[in-house]
Amino acid sequence: MYTTVRNPSTLHDPAPFGYSHIATGRGDVVAVAGQYAADGSGRVLDADFDTQVDVAFARLETALHAVGLDYSHVIRLGTYVVDHDESTLMAIGRHIARRWETPPPQTLIGVASLALPGMRFEVDALAVRA
Image: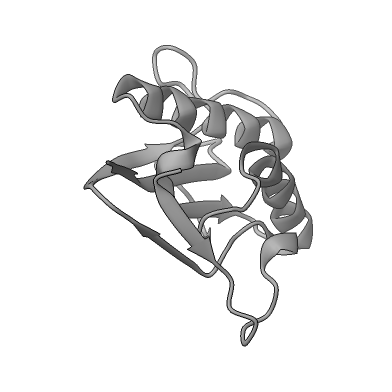
């Protein structure tokens, strides 16, 4: 693993919410722009929230693979949600738990809208290449 994730006992346990408090890494930082549920031409998929999250994370994985990285290299996530509520938080947490044993630090931001009509979720990432 290229990162060390830490959750100090002096802070609450963030795992149920799909993130960790701190990550450190060694090497070059790689930034991945916001990924969303899109078809091959960039059009937003007409899909429910859960599917949009799944496709966005799959696209994140594709972007990481394109530069020889994978989820284990990610040291930070930024997630953006339209109409955020507890159910969207739990859905994101489930998708993150499927991909990371210990999730990276994450900031979830509720927004009024995203770049294109129909987008309900977007994720960006910072990763480290050793």
